[in-house]
Length: 332
Image (spheres, one colour):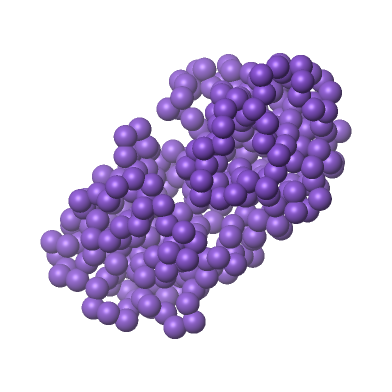
């Protein structure tokens, strides 16, 4: 099976979305698929090696034949639609509700009404499309289950510090990730308890609010990071399938999220089973974080439940991509 991922006008950079696409392509290739990345510029992603062919295309009539061509971003949809029919069935893997790129009205007109087969990566995106009477198929990318795991001897609770963890985002993504909530929660906890620390990671310079910070951590650093965090803070409000909380959960770190419509965590964060889900208010979010601070037994139980749930219900990348290939084979 030949699969083209269409990145024209979207590209590959150092971000979670590009990392997911590259790992997806590599995994599909390992499973025997012939995978091509079609782009309008150079591959700017440096975190992971792309093991698939990458073509910078100037003439759309020279796209190789394939079974499927899959738009990867909103701006690549028009390119996919204009591709010759020999490129295969035209699809779109929708992985976010990208209102930072176009208005909701434009999304409906240019993306949802486009004649493509719609894949989504999460429950919340599938539900969003249903609001506009658009059908979709869930395709989750899976997780790096061999790279993210709890240490045999837990580092949590080994020192007097209680570590809150969070993702650092700035500029247009700061509002989406609600980084402000992480800072305000930490401020509240520090004012009330003397042993609170904030650990963060991201792809920018260290924010002044963080007591510890990794910029672009490698897989070993990331696993160590999650294993040191006592509670992961996930207040984000506009996601597809939000990756860091699930990664934290693989190390048995409990997570606090919210019930906002597009949290991107409905696939794995279940209140009082695999984590805590607050109401969509800062006050409720802080209350749930404080609850975990006070209840060590609850933290431990939710952490263990969380890892089991990710492994059992979502699984590794190879298992997820085998399901994806089965889906593609059954598309008429």
